Image 1 (cartoon, chains in turn brown, blue):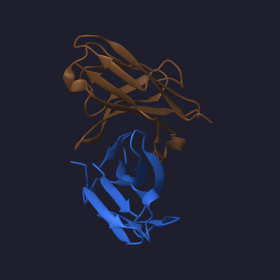
Image 2: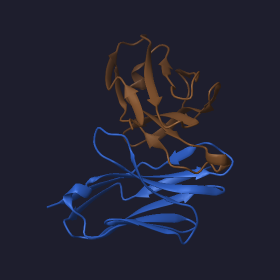
Image 3: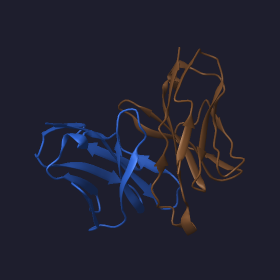
Image 4: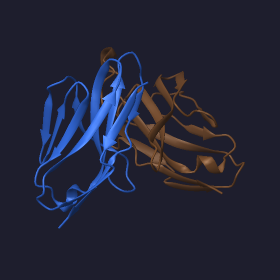
Length: 116
Length: 110
């Protein structure tokens, strides 16, 4: 089982460039989410989705777009990269299981993004 | 406002020296409290879920407990391989959002 797969592992962008961070999961999880992790700030939720075609904003959504066309994939788009978006990005998924919504998140190994 | 606070920020232990990590939370309607371990350069790895006050879970040298205001992760006779950052998170009833603390960096010296 691959679990949650994120690509690329590392990326360097110049200010103003755009890119897409990829996330795929093979566990048939309805819920998928993106977090950023910065020193001293912990994991902060950017966007999440509870199923194909359904997305919503988290705590820090500005500068990021998402879409969910399939259960397996949940890409994160940076439209115009800024140095403030330098961070480690994690994708996480879980099952929603009959409405209980209390299953643990399963994480990928992250994408380390530097914006210069 | 929902909040998760972990202490201490960092902890150094000698091998075999037992200790506890704290996770204090303020959330309206706790649905679940989660402990994760994170190694450098990796994503968080799930350890435990606790659902109600009084609940305890154990795995090898780790034991997690839960009260109405906080959770403890007890580490008994730690080994150097237990060195990692330990994260705590909560999930509030009525939302799909998981709220994380900033973690405790544990270093176990041989």
